[in-house]
Amino acid sequence: MLRWPADGRVLFLHARDGWALRRFPLAGLVCEQGFKPFADALARAGLAVVARAEGRFPLVLALPPRQRDEARALLARALDHLEPGGVLVACQSNLEGARSGEDDLDRLAGLAGNFSKHKCRVYWTRAEALDAALHAQWRALDAPRPILDGRFVSRPGLFAWDRVDAASALLAARLPDDLAGNGADLGAGWGWLAAEVLARCPQVTALDLYEAQARALELARRNLADARVPVGFHWHDVRAG
Image (cartoon, rainbow, N blue to C red; front, side):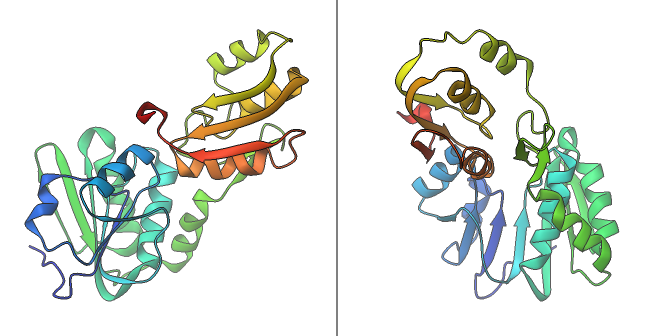
């Protein structure tokens, strides 16, 4: 139904490695992936991986996430990377909002086609009916925004992105007050628990935050910019050691 570009230049947003990619010439493929385990898998497969893509492409592939604001922002940004006359192709499973995603892309830019198989939907556009106002509105949905009375910033799609999850609150309330020295937060998210450790444990002298999701780590940097001790930020999959 659709052709791989003759020059091979393709951008893949929220990229995942898989056998289906091996059907195509991959020398010109650029994979954007901010989740470290998936990024590492793409790199091990010999693919070009970036945390944030630049430029325009004749073909943009996207795997929208389940969270709708994040997915809408991804579709809007995908169109920013599309060359005039290019094609944006998105795919989702039915259990992760495929019908909503298809409807959203239709509203945003008009559909050029769709296909359903194996409990998934693939749908695409040539952006011939782009709603510029909606495009600008959805592009802004991924922007960091104040939460918790302005004490922190976060963004849709992250774990407990707009609240303190119950388990973290329970742990913070029971932190021993004699924690001391250098510490690490494994799976730091957007930094709430690390901030609580520093506020409640005055003998902590340094803290390293490890987080696999780059979109969350960026926010943790902002949320702990004024920390009273040295803080390190590491985009890392701690399961790998």
